[in-house]
Image (cartoon, rainbow, N blue to C red; front, side, top):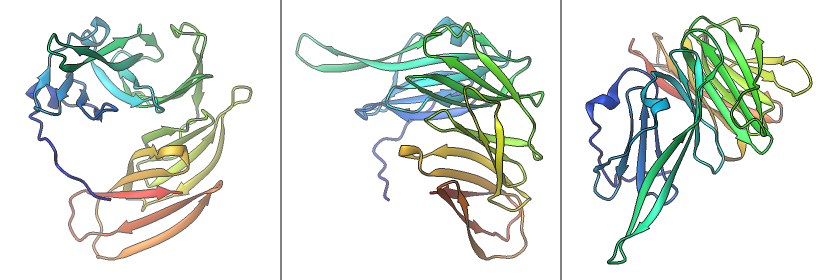
Length: 277
């Protein structure tokens, strides 16, 4: 893989607020989207300049504490708030032509009504959607781990089916859902990934727990690659005293965890990626 710097963006101060952050680019690679708890901003990649846009009142009147992408081709997001609500956002672009025939693209964002799901801030959030509906997995600041299923015909989210899951042994640090809305993966602060099988007709079942890192290493991010056949795990190594490389493989229901652990001599946090195939 390779990367090329095409445009350096200058992010306003309000976009570096504490909280979640997500960066995306539209399908034509012309507009960058920067989402944080402080604001949502769009940038023209050709000039690097911000694009003015009026945000929906549902977004500006709330503090965003978590966010997740719905996956698929449609630019859908779910955001969790400090009040324990979830809002669904749709991000898109409109193409306009000037009198001179010049093409211009303008971003737009639409927000649904907030859906109250728990008391207190939502600190972790996973979201996937398909033709059958939407599925959310969320962790509240109070430690509640919830799975929320919303039917496709329940557009407003008035009748969510909420199931509370038992707490894993470790502190929950990351969540991921697959595109079929059948599996939840939970990362923990002690290097574990817990597999939870989900069903519309049966109670969630804890299928397995996989050790993907040392007990002093937190799983910080989980995310599926295209096709959902590979789950990428990012973890943060807190401390180790020697320097070596360790490679382990574990089967995961037809997928494989390829876990490459790089140990560092420094005491500062070090990022690491783990891939499930």
